[in-house]
Length: 140
Image 1 (cartoon, rainbow, N blue to C red):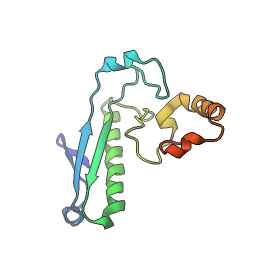
Image 2 (cartoon, rainbow, N blue to C red):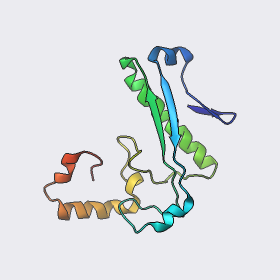
Image 3 (cartoon, rainbow, N blue to C red):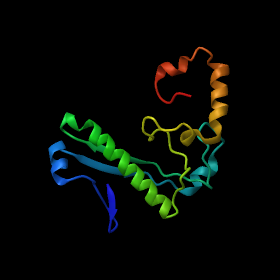
Image 4 (cartoon, rainbow, N blue to C red):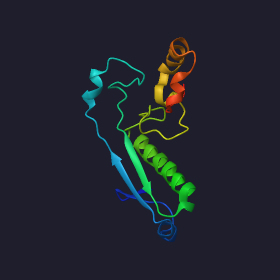
């Protein structure tokens, strides 16, 4: 995807999109800034000085050979959107990501910030047999 004249366009050749049967959508969840004022802490260290607005990129396609290309389009699009948000002063390179929307393989520091080491210590203390890892999700 790319921004052009205020609109969002899907990257890739038209023929490629047609061959994959590609459909893409972007959902943005704008949160009111004061939602961060009610935080009592937690694993996700959010606050009103560093607000976040989660967004979801959804790509659907018909051709199973398109797995890697669809994943690539999502990564490229998310990077472009984030860079645009940084340029417009709406984000920063070290902005924390909302874990429910972060893609697989995301650096845990970008999810938990300065809380990561404390979370690892708590996991080691209260889950020495690593039971929590059986549930899936992010691995501390």
